[in-house]
Structures are given as C-alpha cells and as structure tokens.
Image (cartoon, rainbow, N blue to C red; front, side, top):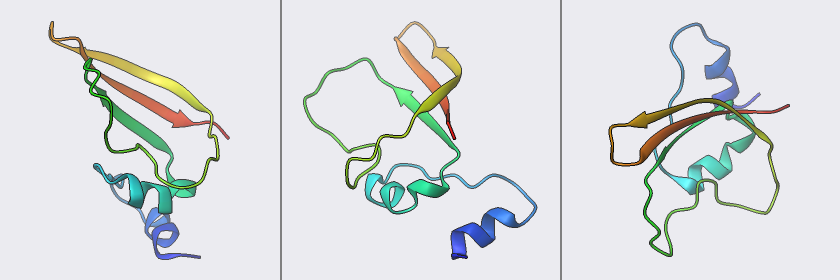
Length: 81
C-alpha cells in the first residue's frame, strides 16, 4: 500500500490537490472527487486536468454552483467505479 493510500485510510478531513495536472496524473487512481472551477474563456492552451496516457475515467456530476453573474461555475464530479 502506498503512502497516499495509507493517508486516505486515516480518520480526518479530506485530502485536497489544487492544480498540478502532472501530480494528479500520478495519483489518478486515488482521486475520488474532482472539483473544477469552470471559467467561460476559450484561450487555446492550458494545464491539463490530469496528465499521462489516455485512460478515460467516467465521472458523475454531483453539484454545479454558479458564481455570480460572471458565468464562472464550480463543478463537482465523483469518479464512477
């Protein structure tokens, strides 16, 4: 069992990863929920949500919260097993 798996077994608060597509890709199998801030701007490139080889993971939308009138939304997804 890896260090992250051991940490997840301990009682306490959730583990949060903010940013870092490369790290998210390395621990992808341990991610239970994705919280994504959607900013309605098309810019052409950016940081991948999860870096690594193509390996689709189905997600289920848990919550969508608009933030004011800006069009920004916070989306919560759970990994579907």
